[in-house]
Image (tube, rainbow, N blue to C red; front, side, top):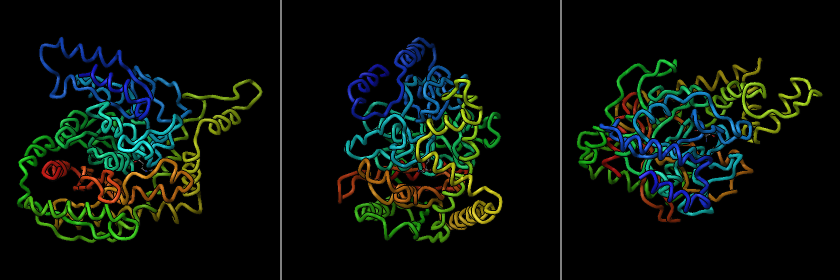
Length: 454
Ligand code: GLN
């Protein structure tokens, strides 16, 4: 199976560009170890997968899509990486992404964009476009992504694949190169909901190496997916988020969403409309909180500790080496975020920007809490539009940011959320995603509803 996927990668990845680094030898060695083992290490032993290049790997470079880390081989494995290895899953390679996971199209990668296998002139979503495209192009049966504001779910939606952002703290962040620590969460990418559940179970669970890791049992996601596959949602209450419709939503996306709601009803779910008024402020709050945390996290790339160092010729001061290295190593979007974040956190502006954004975050959390008193899950389109053209939004950061309009609330509140394929748009024939959101620690509800729907 591993060799077949390596062959497929050799055949198509020149055009797709889903992978930044391949480890054929390591993957085949892991596969052979599974063949030789007396007992399989897990239900997924021998199933190869693709890993987003933001998770550290002892034996492979980890670049985060940045020139700053080009060629850097970490001295340790992320907890997620370690768990995959222990489960006997061969790691095919590291996937392309927007630099430091900042973006919605994978065009911010320093190593060229990934192409959407459905239409190579279009983006595969981002920041985890490489992971999603590797699934859609059948280069890997499973992949790992990370989701700070939608980077698992939005690529899932626009490539017709399944993407899950687990409850914040449900999967260890140890070895996940930090973008926005209070939002970042790794999760499974797959072509079916049950596949995602099996991978979820491998990577989830408490980790003493991550202080925000939740010390609670992993929600029964596999059992829930199997239950969902029976196709009966009797007794499940579904809330349609009022705010995620109207202007800015493509007609084809809206029609697909309406059909999805009708199907949930046909499966026996009770559907009601639920207003979450503060969700409207999620995007602006996110674009203060995420850049603020990023400006602090990226301070570690100081030309001294990791990766790139330029002007190290004895004629430049340490400060000059630092600033010249950052100038050369970081792309435009990363610089924009660091500047925004530094500004929002500066004395005199902190309360007005970062402080206000944190208050909005609390209001969004309360909207979720109120909603989940009435319903089991909330649903919305995953994205307002289908995959846009490569190049279409690169000069317009605000248009780019709109791709995550519907996905960001779950990150701000720490909830679990999934994107599940919802057919093709009747407007342009491109994949559409249905987003399902559940309370924190109720990830299993996503899998039950998602598996019944898909
Ligand atoms: N697109 C969002 C951003 O650019 C989300 C990124 C992510 O989830 N990593 O910040």
